[in-house]
Image 1 (tube, rainbow, N blue to C red):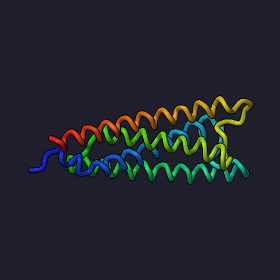
Image 2: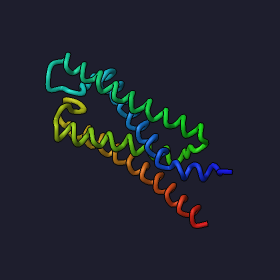
Image 3: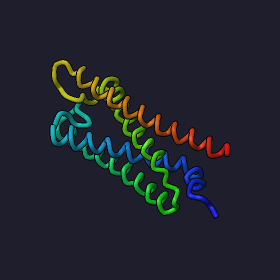
Image 4: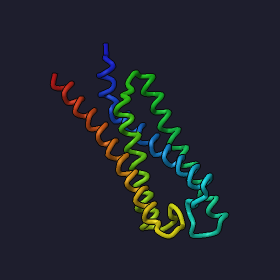
Length: 158
């Protein structure tokens, strides 16, 4: 008979990947709905016409849903196998969300300049809040994943 803990260890990588995909999709969905649609601060691609910006938002939205649904299918499979490791999965959610947000804030906003958070004077304040929020999510994710790794090592040692 295989224990639940043994199943969690066997599928620890899948728990992490499922959480990362879900977190990435969740934060991208939140960005799309709040900043693109409700507040209308920017589009995914602002270096062209509004029509192109809206099309780019639609593609970005589709990407976020593919990641979210993929992560949830993996989550359901882990539950079916009784291998869901919630702490590790949540660590993945925070890692995925924070990494995507930091990538967006540094690469897309500053290096590629395909859009800004908001087109105002002193955008640096928004950039700092955005990137510090991302770093905090990554920190929480790393802590949770580290705790499950340490716990796993303790279980294997026994």
